[in-house]
Length: 112
Ligand code: AMP
Ligand code: ZN
Image (tube, rainbow, N blue to C red; front, side, top):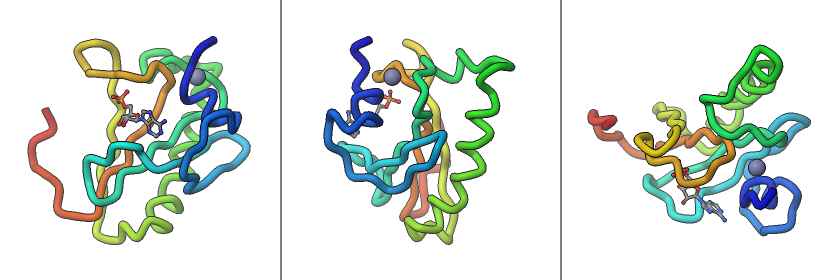
């Protein structure tokens, strides 16, 4: 499968690693939309949050368990936003589940 985030997880494409564990890999977004913009992806290919199932939901839970520590390491004591775009209407450009962690400033009240 030709998936850029699988290639990043496998080390075939370079990235600025923030965190990794058995379940997930976190790295800085190449085109940041906030002073801090990090992506957290499962090591296993899951197409989007719309493809979360009872079988893979434990991976998503592990990602959310890791996020507070990732946010702390990024200095996001003031708070942050987690975003996951899904499908065409959600403007998902990479078809491998990922959670954007955005922060480092007071974010917009608008989400859409
Ligand atoms: P989305 O539009 O929600 O699918 O988000 C995909 C994100 O991946 C965008 O914010 C891109 O800037 C980011 N991105 C694409 N390619 C890379 C890459 N090679 N390294 C880091 N971030 C990337
Ligand atoms: Zn993938």
